[in-house]
Amino acid sequence: MSAAQTLLEFDDVHVHFPIREGLFKREVGRIRAVNGVSFEIKRGQAFGLVGESGCGKSTVARAALRLEEATSGSIRYAGEHVSLMLGPDMMDYRRKMQAVFQDPFSSLNPRQKAGQIIAEPIRVHGLKPPTEIKAEVHRLLDLCGLPRRFEGLYPHEMSGGQRQRIGIARALAMDPELIVADEAVSALDVSIQAQIITLLEDLQRDLGLTYLFIGHDLSVVRHICDHVAVMYLGRIVESAPSEVLFSNPTHPYTRALIDAVPNPDPAVEAGRHVEPLAGEVPSPANPPSGCVFHPRCPLATERCRIESPALLTVASEHSVACWNSPQAPDHPTTTQRTSS
Ligand SMILES: Nc1ncnc2c1ncn2[C@@H]1O[C@H](COP(=O)(O)OP(=O)(O)OP(=O)(O)O)[C@@H](O)[C@H]1O
Ligand SMILES: [Mg+2]
Image (tube, rainbow, N blue to C red; front, side, top):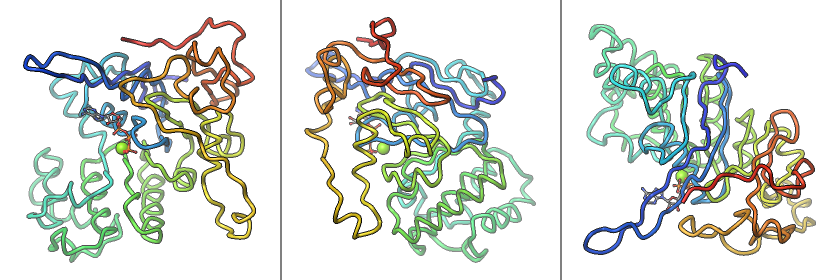
């Protein structure tokens, strides 16, 4: 894959949070929120990241947005190392990558009207001459399916879906290339969710956007994403094109996640037997040895308790980190790096 096609690339990224105690705030441990994550997002792709609460999805997003520094590993954007960007390059990077979060109520200034909220980044970054800002706000409201009168409304005067449209308009005001949508539709009612998903799909098609789409609702992620990576306890355990992941899940954790999605037909659902995953997600401050999934895995063997499986390619664009996958080597020549 050439660097021109790859927009965002994580290579063995770790984000650890120190646990400090005592008068001198001595480091007594680390929360390994992201523990050796590698992936590539191609230009124009909708890349999904799924996994249970606390597995590190938002920390991946925050590292990409440079709201969190990576402890180790490299993050590249269009081939450039993000950690080395300075001054104007950094400003440009911050413009090109915009975030839409779960709760626009807390991310929109309650004392600003929507028109000001959308205009502010345009003004601060000097993206349009002052005389053109109003027209640009109108264009963005149109683009996000809101009547122009919304420029005079405060966030509390809108519904959740309308606020999320303002959040999207504000992100688009920066003319971004990549949108990080972290649970952007999770808090909305199902019918409103569908409308916002349609909007995101339309915008992607019309503006050529790239998405890092984070969600825990697999049916939503499946609908919107071309490629999905499954995270468990700070690692990617499986990564594949959406249709492959959902039709041929290979990692036992992916299978359990997909099995847990209820069938929309109540008659089918009533006859379905789903074996729930045993146990709880372990603490990222004290991850299990070997494969981090082994304490909950129905297929775990002695090897899984000792050695960590690498994320290996099993088919085109499909990779899995599991000793039971058909491509896993017989000998542990490619164990994942773990840092202290
Ligand atoms: N600033 C921080 N300091 C300490 N620990 C943190 C910090 N941010 C996140 N964590 C911890 O890192 C782990 C991963 O958190 P993260 O928010 O990335 O998970 P997530 O997959 O987004 O979960 P959710 O689905 O609930 O949003 C969690 O155990 C969390 O408590
Ligand atoms: Mg999160």
